[in-house]
Image (cartoon, rainbow, N blue to C red; front, side, top):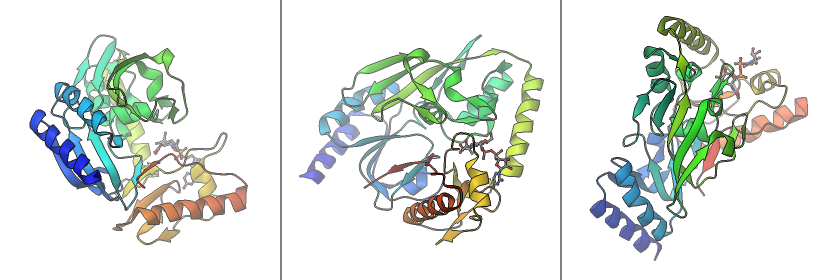
Amino acid sequence: MYDARRDLLAREIQSQCRGKLKRDEPLAKHTTFGLGGAADLFFSPADLGDLAIAVPLIKDAGLPIFPLGGGTNTLVRDSGFRGLVISLTTGARRIEIGDDEGVIQAGASTQVVSRQCQRAGKTGLEFGCGIPGTIGGAIWGNAGAWGGETMDCVNWLRGIDLRTSREIYLEQSDISFGYRHTDLPDDLLIVEAGFRLAEGDPKTIAAEMDRMLSERKSTQPLSNRSSGCIFKNPPGHSAGALIDSAGCKGMAIGAVKVSDVHANFMVNLGGHSTEDVLALIARVQKRVFQVHKIELETEVGILGE
Ligand code: EPU
């Protein structure tokens, strides 16, 4: 019954849409950690028109749906995902930079957007120059760095409610957000957003970006596969400093290790198991609690059964 539903949906999407539909797609290929089992179905619409055709079909099939951004903050369990993943990284990544606003599709790379704004002499999004992942993911999790936060710059967003196929339009003031958090629902597929920009000097912006990038290079383990910071900073503390002073640097399970460079990063040194990451997360949480009496909360989300 279940497989029949999945196969029917796959055939419907393939016959009506122009985008790519893959079956049993390994999500390890789509996460920066390089880990995770397969998704039953993986759909990359060709463009927003294609997406509009697919969403009602997906909704009617009743399979679980997961909108995946750049896979930078998602840990996919080894058992994979018994549903359909939607990815906008090929079909919706247009960047239009206007005078005081950039209209950016959700699948655009945050780093590319940041660089294009710099080249166009627009200031506001330079903090995104070192943040991997997509604009959709950056909005959903309110990604930030060097004092900048994505949601601070969002004027409005458009998306699709995947439960009803309805279009959604939200202004920044409709959205509640804070450090690494928004109240946007899991079944909202962010499609595009308007970002506040201001006039700036391309050279000055580039210099600021260079400073951020070199700081990042010297403090974060960029040559290894990772999910960025694993834990949120607890109020008034740095998770990295807490983990470091609890003696967790170098702690490892399988080929997953707490980075020697920055303790809030876990690096994948060639492993194949997300369960190792999850076990290491639990071990670090336990040690930090024993030493500091502080509970660390993960920044990364977990997908799969
Ligand atoms: N520290 C240690 N040991 C470590 C790591 C850090 O003692 O192993 C100390 C540092 O010396 C510093 C303090 O902890 O005094 C804070 O470290 P850092 O400046 O690296 O900043 P962070 O709070 O760990 C945050 C974001 C990063 C972002 C940087 C730069 C979080 C969880 N992390 O890191 O974001 O790139 O600031 O703005 O908010 C991410 O979210 O994935 C991420 C990488």
